[in-house]
Every structure is written in C-alpha cells, then in structure tokens.
Length: 261
Length: 82
Image (cartoon, rainbow over the protein chains, first blue to last red):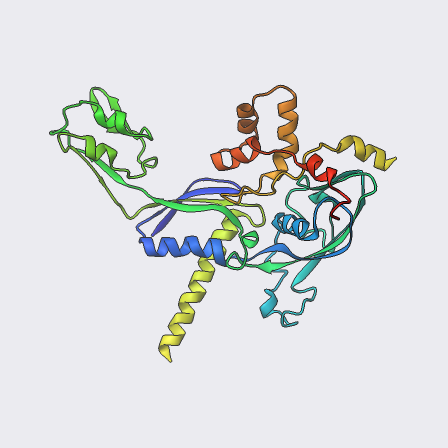
C-alpha cells in the first residue's frame, strides 16, 4: 500500500492510495468522519436574550461554528478525571455580552484560552436591534461525529475507484461515439486514435463501453483509490488522516486482545 | 467612540442569519457571506462572486443564491409572541 498526495493544503487534500482494498479504505473514511474528535459548543447558558431568535435556535447556530482544536490539551468527557462532570481538562467556555444595535460575529466570543477560538471570526451569529441584548456563556467540549455532525472535523470526505481504461486498437474503428458519450471528457482523439486523457475523472458509468459497437473499450477496477478530504478548519487535514488511522489501529488491536483471551 | 466605529464597520444588513454551514455537505460557508454581499452590491454577477470566493460545489452555491432575509417579517410580530 502506498499513499501519494496529488495536492494538499491546510484545508483540503487529494491523494491516491494504491494497492488497497475497498473495506479498508471505507473504514478509514468512516473513522475520519465519525471517530476523529473535535471541539464544538455543546451547552449554552443564556443569562439574557432579548434578540429576535429563540435560545434553542441561537444555541444551534453557535454549535455549528468550528473551533480550533488542540487534541493534546483536552480529554474526551467520558475519559476525563472528572468523569464527565466538566472540568478545565475537558471543556472550555466562551463568553459574550453585547448590546444592540450591531451584528454579533463569531469573533466577538472571548475564550478562556486564546489558542482555542473560532476558526473564522467573521461568521454572523445574530443581528441585534435597538434595545436588544445578548449575554451568554457557551461551553465547548470534545465530541465525535458519531454523536452530532457539528463535531465532524471533515465536510467532504470520500473516495473513488481509479479505473483502468484500455482501448483495443485492433478493434477500434475510430467512430468517436465513446468520446461524445463520456460526460466527464475522459477520452479524446489524438492522431486519429482514441486515447485516455485523464482516468482520474472517470466515474465508471460504463457509457463508453455500452455505446462501443466494436467492443474495443474495457473499464476495469484497480486497487487504487482517489481520496478527497476537506477539513472544516478545526484540525489540519493531515492530522485528521493520521488520527483516523490511529483510531483504526487502536480498534484492530482491541479486537486482537479480545481474540487472544 | 469604539461603538460608533463598530457600527460603521459592521452595519446591520437586514438579513436574518445566513446558515453557518451548507445543509448538504456541511462545509462552513457563513464566513464568506459579508464578502459575497459586497461583491453583489458592487455589480458583480453571482457566478463571478462565488467563483472568486472559491465556492465550488453546487450545494454550497445554492445556499448563497437562494438565501432570503426574513428579519422584517419576524420583527413585525415581535412582542406578540415573545
């Protein structure tokens, strides 16, 4: 198995995993989506809310704001020394006290720890009009995507099989029907021959195989997968991938130890 | 003084709450909202504005295109219900 990164930055990565099987790749995808923890607001104390929005509505909006996460700093609440009661080791609070008239942005929250703050400070949370006031304390904690989608560190996280497209030059009559039938422009004509332009774009719809009268095209699965991962900003993409693999390994080892008994 | 400055920097827009995340893919989009509105106001087409902001998928794009302000409607009934 090998991993090659095609392009990568802090928020988005595209890579190819070669010689793998689909079960493993899918479990990695699910681990990244559901099991990698990140911080989100989970509990909000409303001291005063005279805005146009209901408390619940507002709490939901605040929960969706991504917060920069440091996995070494916090424990999962159920594995913390406080046994889920809530202590500085497993939660962090954000305070806000603003009077209208103005828009409240995510950057207006004052955090206990300056390093743990909203990823973007220009997300509009609510608009306050004259005489309206908002005084809240939002408590954030670690959680996993299994529990609520707001804890998911990734937005887009999926893979695609990289196919092998072969064109039998002996059979092909260069009618060009396959080129027109392809919705993703995978094939093209060069020197009066049909060639594969970019097999990464292929979604294996098999339209070219169906339309070919001469049965010259074959599209086959390989053991290569094109993975796309996009982070919401709470964790860098590489950390998410690493953490996902770590969690998978942990689970496999746990299984092993059960079998040994 | 500070408050007055803030008023100018962050004017009220009359829009009620652009969704923080895209309903379909879950990517965070609200940080682009102010910028998007500025671009539209300056006469750019929606297509160009969204392309410049780097919003690629059509699920996220429709969040911008179809957003409708409802704060005025809500404000009319304020006091009657809460």
